Image (cartoon, rainbow, N blue to C red; front, top):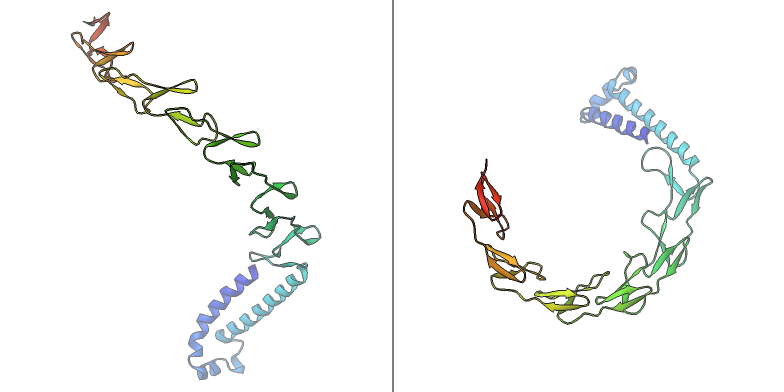
Length: 255
C-alpha cells in the first residue's frame, strides 16, 4: 500500500536520526525534556512516527473491513485478491469449480486436465490412444504414433519400407527415403549408375561430373577450352575471359 511506503521511508529516516540520541540515554532525557518536547527535533520525529503508524493501522483496518470472504489484501497496492482456488466475481470470490480428472493450476484461478485427458468445454475427456501409439500432450488429439507408424484417421498404420531404403520416422509423407547411392522411382529405390569422372552428390540420390568435365547424357566428357576462355564457377562449363564475347564455340575479342 502507498501508506506503507510512506511509513517505511519516514521510519527509516527517524531511525537513523535517533540512533545517535539513543547512544546516550541521559542526553536523550535532557533533549526530550517536558519543557522542550515539542521543540525537540528528535522527539518530534518520534511523535510524527507514532502518528503515522496510527494512521497506517487505521487505514489497514478500514481496508480489511472491505475484503470479502475467501479473499486477502493485495500484495501490490490497495485492494484485495481472491484466495487460492477462488475466482473473482461481481459478488466477491466464488469457489472455482474443478471437473473430474482435473486440477487447479499454479495461479489458483483456473484448472487443467490430468495427463491422459483432453480439455472439452467444461470437462476433461479421456484420451483413447489406438494401438501402436502413445500419449502426447503436444498433439491436438493427445496421442502420437510410435516410430515406424503413421497416422491414418484414428489409427496408426505401419510404414512399409522398400528394399534399399530406411525409415525417416516422419509423421507425414512417405516415412522413408532411399539409401545413399539409390534414387526413388515410384515406391522403389533403384541403384545409381555413376559414370567415370563423376561422384555422388551430398544428398546421395544423384551424381555430378568432376571439375573440368561436362555431363553429356549419362557420361562425363572432358571440357575442351577454346582460346581466351576459362572454367566457370561450377567447373562444368566454360566462359570467355573479360573483353571477349562467345560466338558459337569460340571467344572473339569484343568490339
